[in-house]
Length: 358
Image (cartoon, rainbow, N blue to C red; front, top):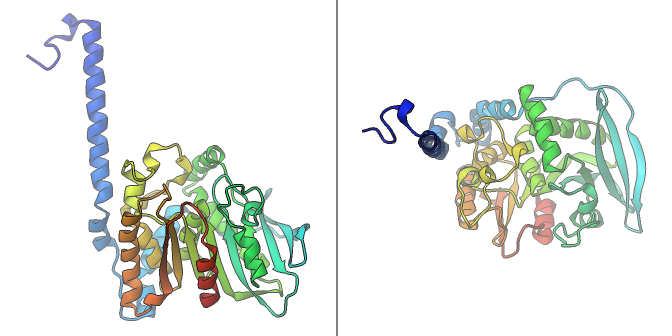
C-alpha cells in the first residue's frame, strides 16, 4: 500500500489534499536543508576562489584583484558617464563651531545625489574628511543628533566636525519597502541597489573632493547599521577611502543570512528583500570583504547587546579578517571594538581610530 492511497480515483478529496500538503511541506524542508548546507560550505569554496598571496602588500592586492572584480559584478557596476551640472548648495545648519549645507548634485537624467556637507567654522588648511553614513529608517540629520531620541548615533557627525574633520553625510534610500521595489528594478538590469548607491558615492566624491577645504588624500568612512553595510561594501570598490569604521553590521555572514537562532536576527526570516546580493554566500563573507579592504585600516564596532548578531560568532569572523592583516605584518590596522552596549556608535574609540589613520 502506498503512503496515502493506491488509486487517486478512489481516494477521498481530503486525503488527496493531505497528501499534497504533506509532500509540499517535506519538499520545502528538504530544499531549505540542502540550500543551507550549500550556503554553509563557503569555506570549501573559498579555497577554490581565493588565492591570497601574503608575501607583500602589492602581491596581496594583485592576488585578490579577480575577487574584487567579481564583487563589483555581484553588486552591479553602475559607474559611467554622468550628466553635467552645477551642484545646488543650500544652507542647513550653523553655530559657533560648524557650518553645514545640503548639497544636491546632478548625476544622470532626473536622478540626483544628495548629502550634507559640514565644515568647522574655524578652519585652516585642507581638512580630513569622513563619510558619515546613516542606517535604515534614518537620515543624515540623525548623524548630527537630530531626531535621535534613543541616542544611538551620539551626534557623531557633529562631534567629528567639532574635532576638526569635514563631514560628508550622504542620503541613501532608507525604508525597506521602497528599497525592495527599487532592488527589483536593479536586479532586472543585472545589478543591485547597493551597486547603484555605491556608484553615487563615487560621483559624490568626484565632485566634493575638488573643494579647496577638503583633503582628498585623507578620506575615511564611518557608517552605522545599513550605513555600516555600505562602508564594508563600498571600501573594496573605492580606493580613495583610506580607513573605515563598520558599526553595528559586521557579522558571521552565513549565520546572519540563513541561521534562525534566538541569539540573533536572521535575514532569511524577515522581510528585507533589498538586502540580498547575487552570489553573496558563494564567495563573499564579511571577512572576505575585509580582505578586499586590506591593507587599509578598518575597525568593527560590535555591541554584545546588539540583536543583529551573536558576538562570539562575530569574533570568529573578525579573526578570519585579522589573519590577512597579521600575515602582511600590519595587524595594528584592524581593530575590533567589542563593547557591552547595543546597536550604537562608540564615538571615542572611533574618533581615535580616525585620528590615527585618516
